[in-house]
Image 1 (spheres, rainbow, N blue to C red):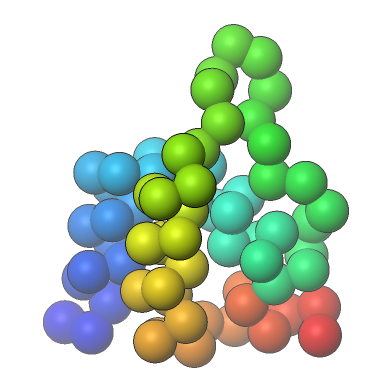
Image 2 (image 1 turned 60 degrees about the horizontal axis):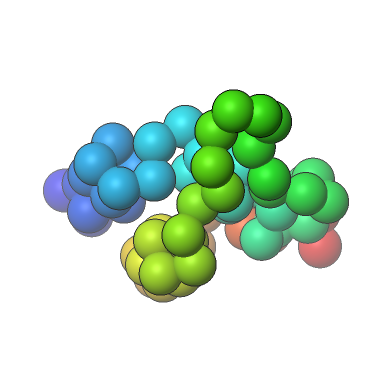
Length: 65
């Protein structure tokens, strides 16, 4: 149940860009921008996603550090 808020945020707010945002924050990739025609993730959505993720300390946020 600890992970449900992050899963819900990904499914309802961030979509498939959640994985890119988390990998970018963890240094796995340099750019989390989507390809055309998808719009970039709004900063408030990205901040909420990262806030929830940091509380859970997933491997993706520590992978490249």
